[in-house]
Amino acid sequence: MNPQPLEPQTSALPLSYTHHANYNLAGIKGNFSKCAKTWQGSAYRQMITQHELLIIGGGSGGYAAARTARDEGVDVGIIDHGPLGGLCILRGCMPTKTILRSSDVMSLMIRAQEFGIASVTPQANLARIIDRKAKLIQEFADDRIQALHDSRFTLYQEQASFVSPTEVQAGSHRLTAKAFVIATGSVISHPSLPGLDEVGYLTSDDALDLRRQPTSLVVLGGGPVALELAQFYSRIGTTVTLIQRADHILSKGDEDLARPVEARLREEGMAVYTNTRLHRVTKEKDLKTVYFSHKGQDITVSAEEILQALGRRLNVEGLQLEAAGVETDDGKIRVDGTMRTTQPHIFAVGDVNGLHEIVHIAIQQGEIAGWNAIHAQEVQRTHEDRLTTQVVFTDPQVASVGLSERDCRDQHIPFLVASYDFQDHGKSLCLGELHGHVKLLCHPQTGEILGAHIVGPEASELIHELIAVMYYYGTVHDLLRMPHYHPTLAEIITYPAEELAGKVLGDTAETG
Image 1 (cartoon, rainbow, N blue to C red):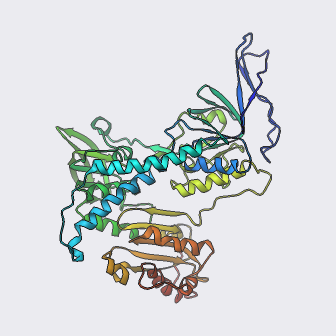
Image 2 (cartoon, one colour):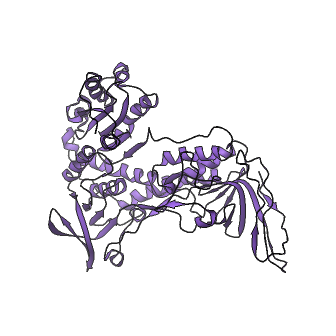
Image 3 (cartoon, rainbow, N blue to C red):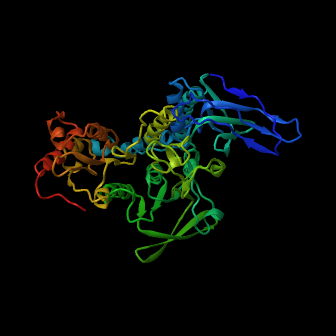
């Protein structure tokens, strides 16, 4: 569909924005009259281009919203200042998984003797690893770019900012729409640590493009990004020290999921400090030094480079949300379950709403927002967190779906819990992958699975059986009835399920 330019209107008023909009939020099909910018006594006119739906941001969440609305026959405009492709493809999920494959292969080669193979001394070539990554990422990005250039969209490769609740400035274009979806994602945060800016540091973006391997690296942070990149560089031969402020890495989850990862990192030669307090950073000659305290002692660690992986912030700078009347909480755009902001015709999806930094959830939210924006009089679709899934691609991997033990205790939800170790499971013994366990939480009366957690080999794949069972509100009894081939990693799930099945309706439930 082609966007419709609105005819300019004159006005006897000074510089002003005049809106005569009939907001029929029941659907895009309602009347939407002309808007115009006028100067008193001037012949100047700025044409305003009208769309039915405007998407700000062409990443995973934004594209999902645009595609959903397009398939309903709606005229969709997309604003993205580039580079096109989105965070997941360009600087997140896909590039990290690509380079991790290289370090995983190198790790297995180092373990060759363990499997009766002559020992080898592999040598990483970081430039070639990055070349492989760049080639694959370009292919992924090209697919997304081609999709954004679909003739059924109008793409504006400009920076967007609201000038009112119904108008956006995108470069030289003044645009208006009945509904908007904000999907601008997140950007790397810049923490306040004395000396860090002066000394300089790498971000995750930088770490994904380095072509010369540092001999030593200090990683600040203990979340998924910090851990995946720390293990990558450690495995290809960089001396790595990881400093985490919380009591354990992956601090948002249960502690028992973090400890097997910490153990593996230390076995591979990484120094891991948790429960620390960062003080300052200095540089002398070619080394950067981090000063911090740990267990009551002052410690210094020096390295060639520092990787700052202390989190991300929501990307709202320059959007002028106040002009749109969109409210934020601590920088996060406030949304309800339908993905609406405090303006009922403006939606926000993905990282920018602060609910989750997970790409498949951004896609789900985008699909919900894209549909709700054009079907407001129908029953609204909502996003629920019952099946929220998180995966960390360390070795061992960590995968979770649903409630954790901490969640249940905080929310006073009664639960039963059981776990089973990979070191006592036949297939994992065959593979030589002994770190970690499977943990299930269920309702004490019905046996319905409330949460499932795996830290161990192929956790990212194994978790999907549990997601499927939980999708249908399945129980531990259902897991036991389902056939599991032997020997497989998947059959380990039946062991904690069997233990829980024997406890259901018993008196051993925790209540928090």
